[in-house]
Length: 126
Image: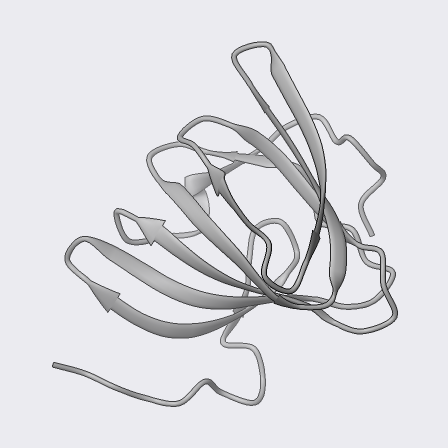
């Protein structure tokens, strides 16, 4: 059994450029808080071996996902959730004036930085 407190500063940057604060890890999955500053857009990536569940806890943004010929672009705000299935291309951006914060469960646990493969962007990152 384990517990902790989110760090004030990011523990790492995700391959897409977002800030990551580690929240816990078990054999079957890992949990993080992901933050994207106002006006920022992540880089588009796809995961090689994991899939994710996202819950927006504050801020506003948009998420683009593409998988097997199907594309979606959805708005997100506090209370919105979505899935990122294995192999989906995705990108997200902060469209509000406050940090966009997501709680992300990764299944199985995040294996390392080479998990994310860069793909063509929907929007210019930055």
